[in-house]
Length: 76
Image 1 (cartoon, rainbow, N blue to C red):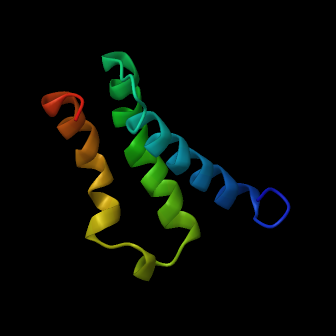
Image 2: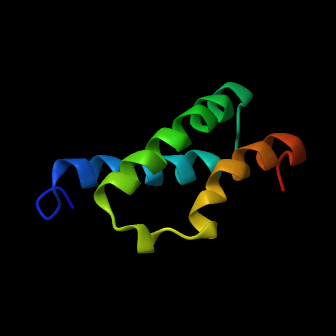
Image 3: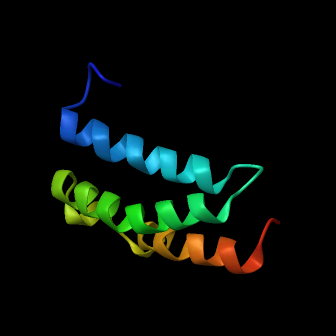
């Protein structure tokens, strides 16, 4: 991926990937969830800078709420 994409695109996609990696981990810690909850709006802003607005729909913005749901519901 590093050779094919520009650095801003790489950074945004890697951050989004790390978000879902940490959210889907078998063991979730509250401090880690709070970190990714604070980071995901910044990551989405980076994505909006490099991708056209047609790329974004409701499903991508639901990632902001996923951390809150994980904290409230606990492991599933």
